[in-house]
Length: 319
Image (cartoon, rainbow, N blue to C red; front, side):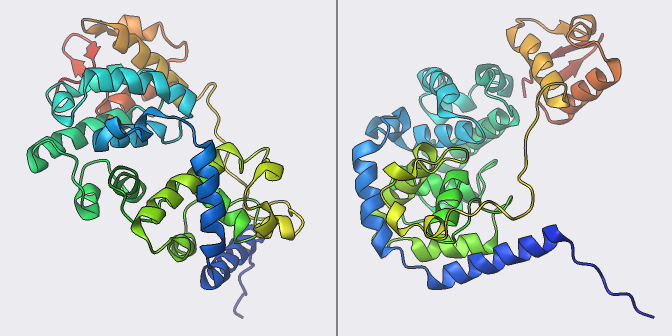
């Protein structure tokens, strides 16, 4: 006798979400959305340093690395200090990677600092110190994925690319697909929808990419969307459906207190402040639980964020 597999509620909901996104992509026509969203952006966009002409492609790239999973308010001071110290990729590439980790401060996810250092080194070696314009060349840089390559090409060079961050995905999920939230991970259907909504004109496409991101950051937020201020509220499929609650797989929530991430952060904080290698006993004082502390330190070493030395000493990496 052959048993029939049981389809879970989460699996069914995920399939329905994908189906809805596919249907939205097939029917998508962004022409009615482009004008209201970009006009709103022209009037309400925040004056952020990486949006100014003097930021250049390097300033845009630095901001994109820093802004991943980190709010603008925390990025701003670190960004300003970073660009003052390393105004060009060559300046960063000339320093030890540990200095990038030190300057990263408490932005979180410090492997991004190592990846940015590696990207700067590759830019210096392969492109004469200039951030490349070609999307494929950007994508080939260490630490640069699909999103970052599209964002730099669009925001720095005004090219036509679908730029899908969390904010944009949420705007499209609500305005076009009629759902409160997008899937937990970016899907092929979302990419298809984003391409279908992209204006044909290159300059307008670049403004659309920035405008939809800003709309998600300022108005179409996850917890408290300000629909009454939204320039496309009357056209929003989610609003037209009565703003139904999320019925897909549970949304991911991040915890910090008591996790290995917190321990790693405490260990790195000691090493960032140190001017000389740090003895093991100093790091031992950071966290009471020895097994978790050792695991966190081993993880930092494995990730290349900490360099072990003889005599039980540690430092930020020099190579």
